[in-house]
Length: 177
Image (cartoon, rainbow, N blue to C red; front, side):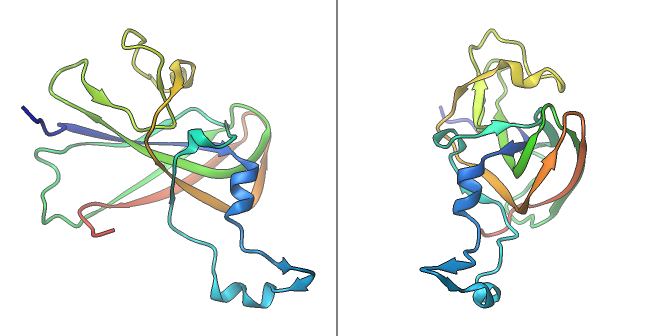
């Protein structure tokens, strides 16, 4: 019998992914010609790009943060077009260049052991403990086949270990995408 997920949890983390980031930059030169004047015709995307992060070289720069959790049965209706706004401060777990923020949604069902994890990596086994904030990424070792939303930064942001970065997010619920 098909079941509807009961709970959705929205997560995000900082990611270093140089080659993937470079592929999504607006070119400034082509065949030796300066094309930067055309940048306004192809502005840098402000929305997250759907990408299966596990297919590309990347390295998490922070622990996953839960941005929001909501009950899919009672909190969201088909007619609802509300906007979920969240703000979170990430602490860099290591030094490097921040290229993107990766976001995903995990879905949980009525049964405690039944969930769909859509992050770039999932728990290595069903017996691993659930993520609990600061120690979450240690248990995320198996790639998932799902796409995540990557919000690329216009410029790479150099971070040192324990630097903090605050991001504000908007998720449009029930909107046609």
